[in-house]
Image (tube, rainbow, N blue to C red):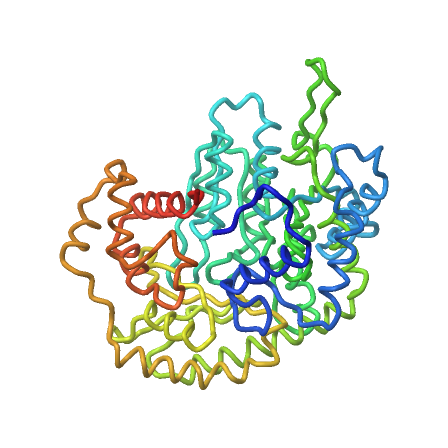
Length: 489
């Protein structure tokens, strides 16, 4: 246990050593073997540059741009760069694009939804139309902001919605239509042009969630990848979000939300003056904002430049090809979709080849992938967000995958005990008390009070979650996280 507030201060070198010891339990953020959560460029010196830039502006506060004009200049530069990458700016069909720098994709998405909702005060029960594959952040935005989420099914074959289904889902109360470029889970780009056209015909805003792919698809297109139009070049697209802490390889957390013009952005702002303190005006959700991430992002973009990002896109594409070839080479495995960008997602056609066990076997060999549960007719899958950092060792993935598959076949699929199956089928979410959750966690061999969850042995947990209905799965995850986030006294 580490004590955050000791009676006497601790020497700096000891504090740093303690932080290093804590970090020893984390998954590796370098080496190209973690295919989720982090985005590694493997460019020598880039992390050090970003850290130095971060430190220079860590205590600058974005609350008041008139007090800190350096931060305003940095934000405007990042917005202009993102606009140019995404088909906007002088000389384009979208010359008046404006934007804001946010803390991440979820904040960008929430703000896009807020702007659409607040632009229509005449609608008292606003609705949001999104494909089932849209990021969960849209469900979060709808929950926070009081919208009804109308989910449109996706094809289990193409993994995208039919534009005519989107059009049919639009109602008089709809304030925003959503599509993804690409959708995170499977890495497939939605048919943005016909979806945006349907939204425009109905007089509704259309937001393209390019948080994941907005900083990779444009360069991949230049490398010859057949990337469909998805940005402001598409008529009817009113806003686009792109995360710079993904394929722009900036530190967490920096995202950009762009609107086609200032009038569309205006409802995003919040202003308040009816109190005794200073007049408050915010373009984003937070008020106080550290300038550290913004400065680090600007330093990263300027250091890499367009040519640097083109080279990183080529390295990423090479890694994707190597990993796809490795998957295709293993009997019983199948790519769920031909990668449109940087995601490799595969499933097992052999019922004796359990992908949750395979994820554990890969983790035990130092390769960390992201399990995804069954959704309708789409089977459980393994997701890999491939970055430029994976290129150097991508050729080693194939032998590790074949070895892990052999071990997975030898171990066999997870068989849930009858009592756990019965529990997953009968337990109501509201019946899951903290005490019941604590007993369930102990029965699964997880120790929230320990040094960390063994991420190499999660197949039983994932199988249990997969057997539970979505509402119960959500409650299980909430209660488990609540257990983890309990202070040690």
